Length: 317
Image (cartoon, rainbow, N blue to C red; front, side, top):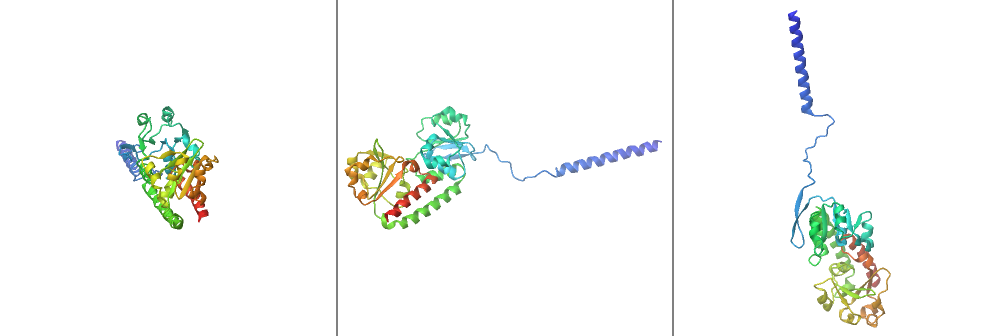
């Protein structure tokens, strides 16, 4: 009897030992259906230091997901790089190209701090002159741009760097330079040695512009090689635009002219004798642009403007 009990006890111990071994084996191997990854989990809170065009250093997310852009000039590049903002200034609605490109994105009043807070941004992009910068900086990392310092090329590079798309930004710039060189060669006989002035005419004023403020300037000056008349270059070198009187036109008008108007609005300056007698006007060297599609100088806007300008230059050859 005692011998039988001993055998039973030993058998139970042996089975218990086997069960423990099997359990340990399964635990070591893991679930057969479990996907095992050797990659370290990404940390969405990772940050980097970004240096603005003014030299300020800002700690920003490496992969921002909720970007709010408070000036239309910085929207197009982000969309070009596949980083759609969650909120953009409602001023984009004034520009047909950017309005279409930002369809479905929330419009915001750039001065509505509470509304911006409600969007819960993880990155805010604004101009260096925004009066609410200190408030925005308390909401999320805030990066500023100064267009008196940076060109459209600088902005494109910086925005690419900001969202981790340096290669995309450089690729677009390289392709753009090739297009500009191709166009400049095509129109060389028309453009070489010629001056060009950019004017905007409204019912309120006649305004002249510098070389880097939309209205085709980036393409015609930087891309194709037009230069400003000396007097015009002098008065616009330190500011985006200068208001003129019709009587001042002869001093500032170039061999070619860009005339920007709002939509189908008539340009009052065209009714003046000074305008009508200008060599550029009489020779048919006026490029007419609609301000509603030529305000900005981001990649999306510039590609659109290029086609408008080429079409008119082709007609002048």
